Every structure is written in C-alpha cells, then in structure tokens.
Length: 154
Ligand code: SF4
Image (cartoon, rainbow, N blue to C red; front, side, top):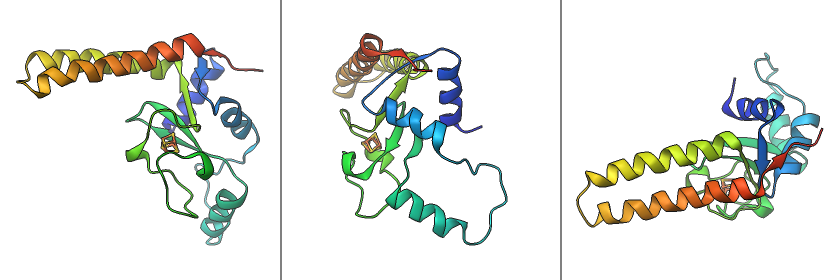
C-alpha cells in the first residue's frame, strides 16, 4: 500500500485533516480511477499523462515534508516546469495551496522535531544553534494542523 493510500485510510479511520487542498484531495480520491496493481496496456502511460495534464488531480506522498501533495500545477509553489505532471517534491515550500496533512503527519512532525532537538545537543555550533529553530518550525506546523484540522466529510 502506498503512503498516500495509507494516509487516506487514516482519514477513513477518523483522523482529522488540514490544508487548503483537503476537499480537492478527497474528492479526487473518491472519483479518480485507481490503476494500482493492474497490468496495463502499452498505451496506458500516454493516456495517464494526458489525464494528469488536462483533467486529473494526482495525489503524491511527500514524506520529507510530511504531507500529501494534491498536485495542481497552477498552485504549485515548487515551480514545476510547464506541462509536467508531478511536483518538485524535493523543493516543497510552506504555504502551498496543494497541501493536505493528517493527524499522523502532525504527530510525525513532532517526532522529527524531538529527534532534531536531541541531535542539537551533540552538534557543535553554529549548526547546533540553528537546529532548535528548525525543530520549532516543525512544531509550529504541527500546532497549525491541530488548530485547523477537522474530520473528513462523509
Ligand atoms: S510546493 Fe509542495 S505541496 Fe506544493 S506542489 Fe510542490 S511539492 Fe506539492
């Protein structure tokens, strides 16, 4: 199971979500055909690319940023090339309109912040001084999720 599918399962199990693309993500998840695990014909890649370029909403797991990216090129702050069908996840930027987070993402943000704080105690300056700031930003993102999160609509 992909991590995006796992995140959707967490939501189905009652986790709350936050982020500007939440409604779009779950509408897409409910309406978009799934091809996972099927044997597909040679023409599939072309058809899928056309669907994603012109009509579709594609959900991408972004484990580094701890979010689901509901990729829509026009909203993407990571500045993908024209006509691409995927985000530049390695350059994911805060405040993007394609973002969705679940309670699990928020918990993982806090765990990562705790790991960074531990690392900071063993890291010489100047990096050791900067790490707690990074940890604080992760906790602030988790706090923002908790303040804004709501249950998925049926
Ligand atoms: S900035 Fe992040 S959330 Fe936005 S499109 Fe790029 S990868 Fe997705």
